[in-house]
Picture: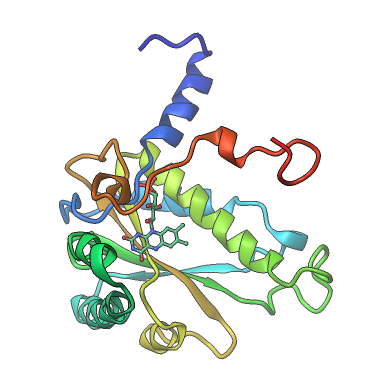
Amino acid sequence: MESDLAPELDAFYRVLARRRDVRAEFTGEPIDDDVLMRVLGAAHTAPSVGMSQPWDFVLVSDTDTRTQFREHVLSEREVFESQLDGERGHTFRKIKIEGILESSLGVVVTYDPERGSPAVLGRHAIADAGLYSVCLAIQNLWLAATAENLGVGWVSFYREEFLANLVGLPEGVRPVAWLCIGPVRKLQQVPDLERHGWRSRKPLTEALHWERYGAR
Ligand SMILES: Cc1cc2nc3c(=O)[nH]c(=O)nc-3n(C[C@H](O)[C@H](O)[C@H](O)COP(=O)(O)O)c2cc1C
């Protein structure tokens, strides 16, 4: 469809709309080094509370490490599945929740609460502001990867302690995400959870409140 927006604005919104969480569409082809550095550079330009830049990126290509992580994720999948009943369990069983081995690379994004401390400007009242910063880095990475025609899949079916030990995180540094990243055959137009009947996106109007919560 023709857009009335200036080309660069149109391109930006198209990237937002094309971004998907990818599980099944990875090709496994290598990621070009320059592209990978641009994508990680995009993550590293994210805003952060007190300019603390509390993130790090552990790049995992080793098959043995990835296999160990996948086995852990599959056991956590079973934990979740055991909590579901009836239709939810039936629907969940059809949903793929990771592409750890099929993707080209795993990126463990971490959070170091000590970075820039003790006086992190803007975090004195909200400890979570550090974590928010890491999530913004992840979103930058996700969008840059989409613009580069790569797919990204966020995996959170893990216990922090397991992943911290697996990739040797120092005491106190937390894993925030395992991101599967790599070239893809295609990006789905509809999110997997929606396609499989788990949950659908709500319209923006349902998330909008005027002046006070609940005032529509
Ligand atoms: C914090 C976070 C954790 C997620 N964990 C998983 C996960 O473990 N496995 C998975 O398949 N998708 C995971 N997702 C992806 C979401 O399911 C996905 O973003 C959502 O269904 C919307 O689809 P879309 O990203 O394709 O628009 C996660 C997303 C976020 C933001």
